[in-house]
Structure formats: structure tokens, C-alpha cells
Image (tube, rainbow, N blue to C red; front, side):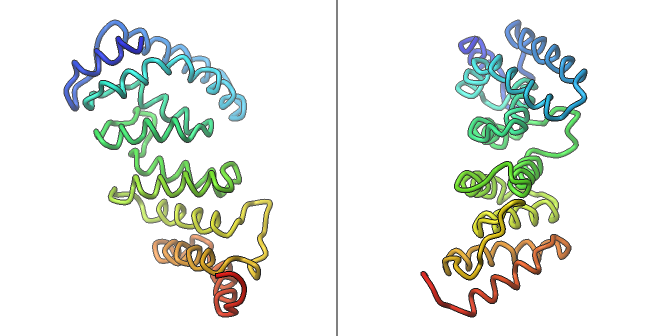
Length: 224
């Protein structure tokens, strides 16, 4: 399947529609999984189901990425979103880089472009405590870098900067850090992110945290 996917991708010019019997087989598998997901009401159960489904497409995705020239591939873009949904950020962002590079369209049911989707999904996961610690910083920084030159709603990008600032502070829904002990360099970086978030969208909800960081920076003691 990997070889067939690579051959189909190589045969499809940028912007064209991937075709062939192997692609039709993968589409049939995708539609079957979608029918299964449609019958599940619980979001949690949907996510668990997607975890068991994404492996069915690994060989196709590997081949499509290896040989792809930017052909429209519904399997590739759909499974990319599933990887983001289940928190498999490394694989999801690997596919997303290709999607961004070639300007592939998302499936019709997603009413956002790829940059906005990446910003929304990553920042929401971080702010909800599903993506924390060093992993959060790595993923959020990568999304910021990948989408920096892309158009996206100010509110969405404000939420991304808020999520980065909170990750730098070590703040999660269940963890309120002691700002008085926060490394000064980290406090400055966090402040820069929160200020940018507030600049983009005044109701993003970071004023109190900016005040706390300001007091920490004015104190100016501790590690720098």
C-alpha cells in the first residue's frame, strides 16, 4: 500500500485529485470508519475509536508523503485531523506540514483552513490541560512557526499566544504556579506572549496573569 500510495501521489500534479484503485480502497475504508464514528455519541468514545482506526492508514500516508506533489487527498487530510484529535501531535504535524506546503483543502465538514485548525486544536488542548509541560511548549512553538505567515483570525492566534504564555508559566487548569519563584527570563518570555495575546484580542483573559508577571519582573530577584 505504501508503494501504491507513492505511485499515485507521484502521478498526481499539484492541485489535481489523487486517483486509482488503491486510493479508492483507502476511501472506502475511511467512509466505513466515518459511519462507525457517526454512530458513537460520546466524544471520549469517538477519540478512542479513532485511536484504533488511524493505524489502518499508516502505509498510505507514508507513501503519499514520500511521493506527493500536492495532489488533493481526502484520506491524508482526514486522518491528519484524527491524529490531532487523539493527541498524536508528532504524526499530525508531520502531515500538516505537507498539507500547508501544498495548500491542500480540508474535508468539507471542517469549516476552517488548515492554519486556523492547527492553531485552534493545539491551543485548546494546551489550555484544557491535555497538552502540558515540555510537550506543550514544543507543539505550540511548532504550530506558531508553521502558521506564522498564514492568515488566521486574531482571536484564534490570541489563544495560541495565551497558551504559549501559560505553558511558559507552567499554568494549567489544575496547576497555579508560584510566580514569585518563576525564572526571570521565562517570566519575560511569558509576558511577551500574553501581551501579544491581549493585543490581538482584548477579551482573551490574560490581564490578571500579566499583572502577576509584571510584579515578578519588577521584583527582579531570583535566577535570571
